[in-house]
Image (tube, rainbow, N blue to C red; front, side):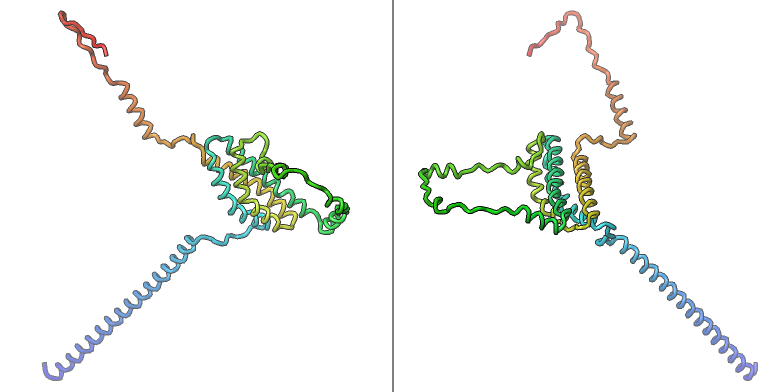
Length: 278
């Protein structure tokens, strides 16, 4: 091979090497581009999944309000009073009659508390003004001069006895005839805790439809919650079981029934049986 041919061969080999290098570079760039594109897709998928997971685990602190204002106000009230009633109701565990009494007194007290509010809301402002004017009574002032001449001859102890009045137990007026007094007393204390909240919530409403829904659903929900509390206090709930447990118990009973009793050996002749008296 002469020098010219060697030069041509070298040039061809160099060009071939350049072509191979370029091809490898292009392939590497393509791989890098594909890898980056896949990374982007994976990142986007992870971001979407995390967003869905966050939305699923985040509590809905602002539920969609009910269409009725009365029900919305009632829902807010129940959140305040039901925990109070549940705590006091579940204190009464000696006798079911105590809880029956508690329930009856609370519902009766709520009805009594809302009845004046219903009357006031139904009465118009003009009618209320007219009634107030009609019920106004003129008071005649007595002869103060003669009153000042009165001489009280009672001793101090007699005055104290006359002035002393026995205060009636407010729980007697609160009570429902025939119901357990312990349940009544606990219900009395419980209602004092919730009375203001109940009346204030009802008096927020001036729409007749809202008032009616609030009243009806309040009584219904109180009864339903008392049913729920009673169910939670039930002590005669059957214990859950399964077939494997039952089979094991049956097998244990069968084995216990087949235990052989010990056989007494006969007393040989000449031997006397000795009885010990304890």
